[in-house]
Figure 1 (cartoon, rainbow, N blue to C red):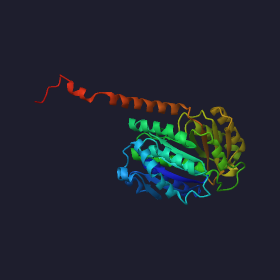
Figure 2: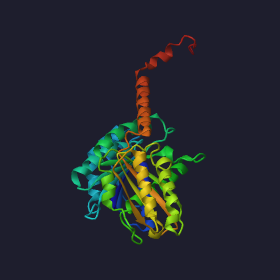
Figure 3: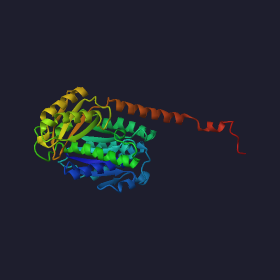
Figure 4: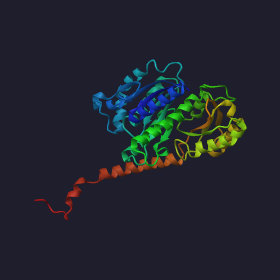
Length: 360
């Protein structure tokens, strides 16, 4: 599934760089090109592709300070500059556009819905958003921003592939180490999904193509992506149980959005050497996903890949009813209520405490 990436904001730019790097290292060629967009000049300087600094007349290259309403206004005002940077990049070969953004900050969460809407107006390919949810420890402002952004971007994009930071953070990691590890993990998952329609090694029995990815996401809304891998036996029959276990782990413990197994549609992809992929195992795994998700729209196929391991990718479409999404939106609503409560309180009341003596 050949695509063009647009990295919005600091988090979006870094994840875009990781995605492009993984695609180049693996030699897939699924990422045709990439552009980085931000209101903070410093965040663009380390990106290894063309960048666009927006909002210079409003914030002078210093960012929007987590204000996603300002981020949306800036993107609306400067969207022509972003579209100009895409000239010559979204070619006839492009089968999709991915807007990559952290939903908790300012530039990414505010700009993503605006840009997705504009891209859909202009281009005749699916426009997806790869959105990153902030972790529970990242502060109330980020929860509020992400709740508002997610609600809006899910309406404007063809689908939102959601990544929950809490699903990947390891105990004992520093903040930067944690984000780097998350970017690498997501780049591997999304990179394999994009490449799965572009067979690079051998010929499988039932190779996945781009249309199956697009059809899985056709209903729109929110999507999640699961992943798991295991050592492969040279004999395909011996890998039946391994494939079943991988697919279960991908859905139940290895997904980008925990507790999101209630889905409208799904795509099961098993990657590895064609001679090691058991057809019976893939079909059993596909039927298990049908039962687990309650969906009758579950597709399955192979991704021929020269490797001593097998890997399972499970793309779940229409997971907005999941417990994780509902709990996140509830946390965002609680943060908004708390912010409004603090705004309503009269700050002058703190000076009326008679138990505190005047200085003079």
